[in-house]
Length: 217
Image (cartoon, rainbow, N blue to C red; front, top):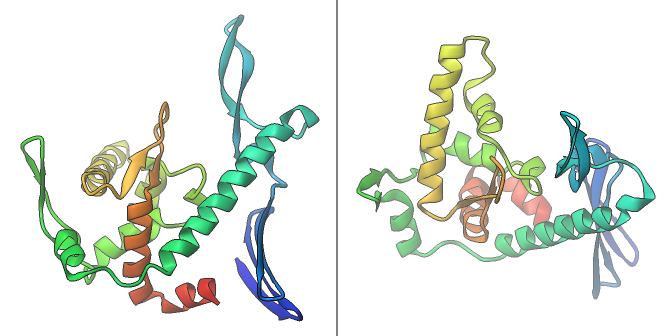
């Protein structure tokens, strides 16, 4: 959910996701400030010690509301602010060149395999691009299961789930060979690259111009 309010001597844009949000203020037309408010730290993870099977282990676990985790709050908020500003920069990058559009639609060969391109007029391709561009994936990235459910829905049929997971893996490969997504180290999650973010926002602006204009207002 997003909301924009204009008031003297500037304006404020606010984006909510669950119980956390990002604010952007424009003061006196010359000072731009972005801040992130985290009210549900459990949505994020922190590297800490824990016990499992009677042994002490170190891993990434849900972040709790304690003073000792303030440094991690700062890291998460900084990442959110930078991701938001990077997205705004991509919105102002203009339309892709003719060469970029040709690269978008043509096949790419990698390790002896051919991966077909993307068609900005194809509904299935657009559904995929919309799914991976959702705001909730900006920080923690997305998993195969997240995008699989977005595209094909939930199912209790194990055979269908495996088939849909394989289809989603092939879609990720098409995105990866174009350097649109990159895997987050030591995880099963993926995240948009700067290149992917810029080109996807341009494509999606054709279908959702009101969202792009609201971000640049």
